[in-house]
Image (cartoon, rainbow, N blue to C red; front, side):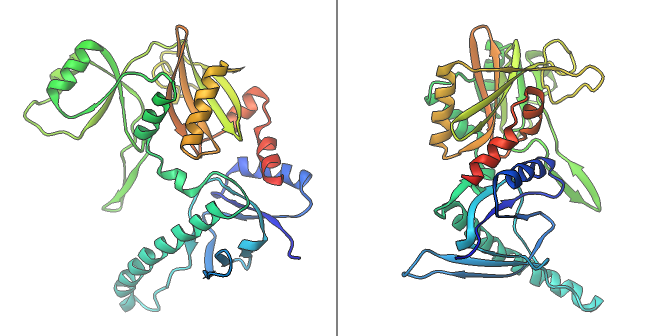
Length: 335
């Protein structure tokens, strides 16, 4: 019988994976296979038949061979599956090979999507999925609301009249990107960053908007003068929660990601109310997500749900609260 191993797909330099692997080595007597973002796939074979489950075999450029039937458990941390590109033999071929590579990339995108599908659905223990990267935050908000979680009042619009009405009812709001707060593109050999965090937007700011212009639909959300923020890491029905005391610092008051290294926020381990954990767990189950980071804020006597990041950071929650989350992940994969 072939030796079973734990498969981890992540990015180069992810220290949290290193710590989890150290725990696995203490708890698990067999091997770990890790694929990093810099690892190219040399060969791939996928066999689909009516006789058995579809099986695949991948050989990496470093010589490591991965067979689906030998995987004990699988953790998708982050990243993609890369393939070894065709290289130009001389300068005259470069333009042509760019066109060929574009075609190959389109083909590979379909193949890698199929491989991720097989990994996500094979009958082994899995933690996170590649498809979790495409989670729609707006849909998540709707599911969370239906499961009894409080959400800040939100408007998505480019209709100036509706935006004006919303701001009259909510004089101070916040605005932030809907999908990706850190997207960047290359233009004329320069990197253009479209990064945007959470910013305040008030009724007075409407004066800067030209009513004759056409705008992209934008998210506006009522500003809640929170007492503290909460980052919760969820894995296999368990919650590891941390309060972030960001309100005492003007720099982090609106968005704690505006880190103040000279006066860092305090972090305190907390236990969420049972009804909040129940609603969060129901939301994760409805989304078919078994692991992820959840953001909430607390004001008055209510917890307000903000978002879920299925492949979010957990090491700072683990370290600041002594939760040892890395061991919990290792134990899940080893079972």
